[in-house]
Length: 95
Image (cartoon, rainbow, N blue to C red; front, side, top):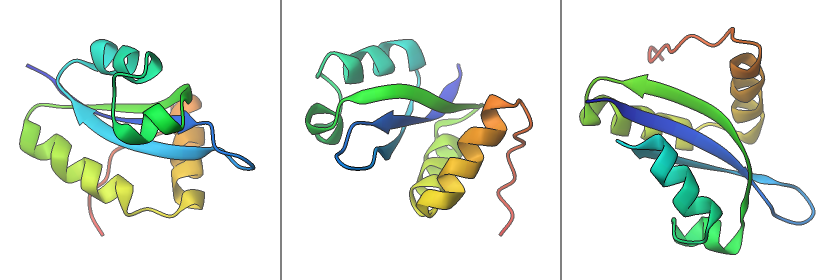
């Protein structure tokens, strides 16, 4: 079984924001967010785009990664999404 960490770009005036989560079914979870059945945050700030995903073998790894991503600054999240789009992203959990 696979576990995923994902990041959504969400509507928020005047600047879009990022929502980070983890799941064992990425397709289902993103659809839940899009239809207002996801987290409370994405019900108030609907997702615009899925900007990052990363697959892990265990739930523990995915949750640890999710916590790390949530602590990143907005600029670091933007850089992460840009590298992901260019297929240059490599997961590195070293501090």
